[in-house]
Image (tube, rainbow, N blue to C red; front, side, top):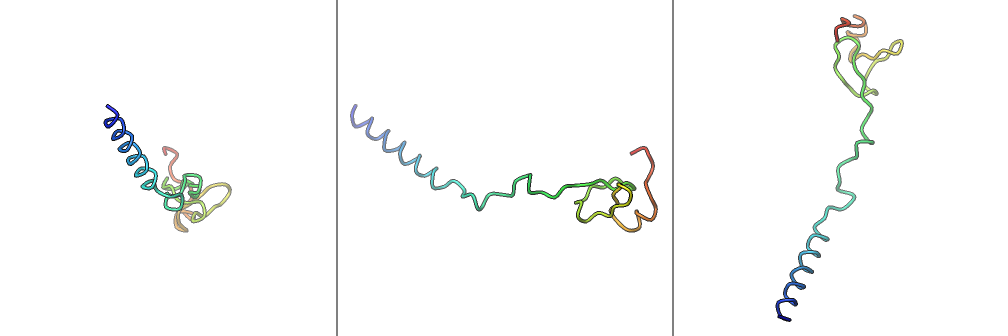
Length: 77
């Protein structure tokens, strides 16, 4: 009975160590959602794009110069 408990303890310790060292490090984790760029919606076509790539006029965002010149799209969106 003592041998059985010894081997169970050894196997448990080995599995625990293997999982501990196999866990991904903090530097290899993907970026968190907070780090993502804020997105805005084009007032003409409705496509979403990062705010730093969008064009803004009077609190409306556009995905391209052509859509900015055409103005807001239909109100059905």
